[in-house]
Length: 615
Image (cartoon, rainbow, N blue to C red):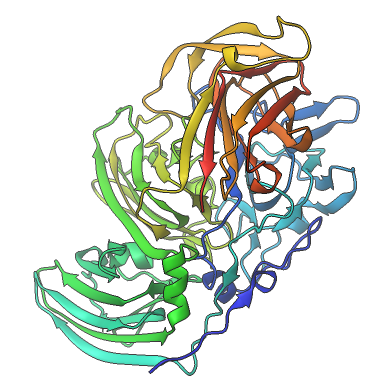
């Protein structure tokens, strides 16, 4: 039986009101678009992490990009170009103040007191430290077409500002279309499965292209139940969509503790444990779902599945516009001070990061400092992380080791905390439905274990993403060194600069002597026209001790945008930054001249690495 899905135009899914705040969409709307693969959008985060490599994440030197002593105004966030501010997490105020959001023309886009911004909402797109156990969070969905500046008179000690930059104001911010979640007039399967110890039982198989909107598993509850012992296997289209993860990782619940979130719900009634997943599962030609029982006892399960058959879903997967449900599950034991981060995922392919469930167990029942570790996310082979946070519980929108106890919200939560004779156990989830992280070639998701990778214990995680396990679509096409640059001004427009210091956010710490160039003068280089469908990406290493570097970028004499590097390190160190050039401004034949016109007096770089995008 075939049901026809109606596709929604992008304007209905991501309601775009450039220069203002978008309405926050429903959870079903977000679930109906989480598998749409974006074009021309990159995810970043500015945070108050310790730029010296230590654990002084609350140092106010790092919590803003500028400060006017005369007006006592902190610039807490600044970016240039087109994009969207999509997440604010903060904590540690002495005196809560007011946040003012202005555009490039100094027009006020939004101005509110802090206690108004972080008011708990029924939609769970904002909350204070009481609702989010120590953290203040807000998903503003604030579009800006030509830059955004956020100022305040009283800065927080700890901040994380997540945002997107688009390659042009006209770029589609998130794919081309989304699918509404339809749960009526759909196909329905209800069956019983008896899983013996050590066996893997098939629970669902079908073909003809489609999408599963609801997967519910019910089983008898007992106090000694462990959802880590029940493993779900999802195989779509012969392994193109591959997920093997414990039920604990999918449902963010170790032993059946309650979870009430947008994509998953866990509840218990009359001795029956109910696990409901609303993560969309897509396939083109066929899908199989099996459940493996690794526990020592048999499990009698009731399975119900709601799904819709539709060829357009398969077409979206075949064209690369949609991504398959994928997962990465892993664990590691640390014996104390070990220099490596915990690696939650190292993905090769194209997709979006959609959710993380993480269990942190310290090796000391009186110590929760394993949660001090920062998250560090490297996108598309970047040498330094585009997303670097201030602590594990901060990434999950909590604070101060979840000081108000466990909780469960639509998009994040801390469902469980327990102390055993061996250690302290904390579980946490964050579903990135309001702010998925796109990648074109690869994604590496790391967490420190402790302040500076110095705490022992066990960390395990399940990471959910949508996409394709493939070669990727971002191709390195060249490197432009200082000898390849020209200038219409002084022949000595470049100065050599030696920086001795570490790479930001890399563990084990990589320290060395970095040979850079520095200039305040315009310079340019030419690239052969390649007709790239998705434009170009430029990357450079730079001296992070030079604050707020800025340059205008022109392509064939036409202004393309401003290349900006927010923040600084109080000590010499190296970071990497990137700039997108949209395809529409590039010539299809001959050469493209790229001109860099520094605005700041000290523009530093090692050269320009050029990548082409081919969607």
